[in-house]
Image 1 (cartoon, rainbow, N blue to C red):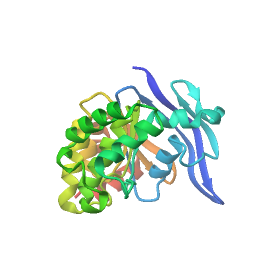
Image 2: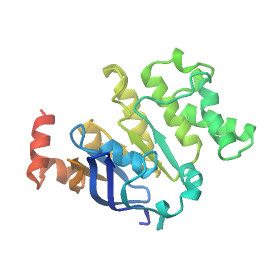
Image 3: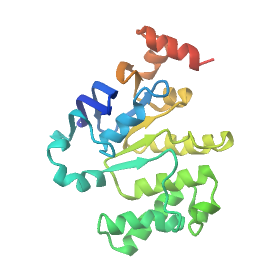
Image 4: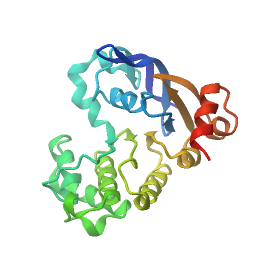
Length: 244
């Protein structure tokens, strides 16, 4: 399989606080990778560095073999290829669900409005939100907002989608509806990198699980292997605490 991302010696500091320390890993075409670990372990920062919402302090991020940090003049083009689903949705409050899924296609990708509308409708339907196309974010539940955000990411036709704790801001009763949508997406062949605290979800949908702690990758492997037979003490302790 072709590598989409190659992360090499990635570091990120905020002042004197070193959040990521010499992180190295690859993500392959159509692979589903879940990042797990305690709060503050660097998972979300790693995701934000990968699409350069945060600028790494050191290291390389190669996208299809090209180090994007050496070509910051092409940053907007790179970001077009990477979908992002945030914890807090980040929808445009003044636009309805349909327009939230159209605007990026038109303004960023330069797609004509009719084509963009067709794409947006198809993706809103795929996440179960076709009947809410005229609703603004303030009229939607958290789960519905997140499904619109997923449709928006899909509408940009990205090479990969990054999910930053997509259920952490949701009420317990709406978590499953979003996880089900993401689970369905894993069957489409799109590459996905998911930061999550939902361990059973990570075990069920992932091709590989990466455990982070203290800004480093402690252990990674197939979900069955990592969850049922972890090798590192830190991984064992984390799973003991979080899985009851």
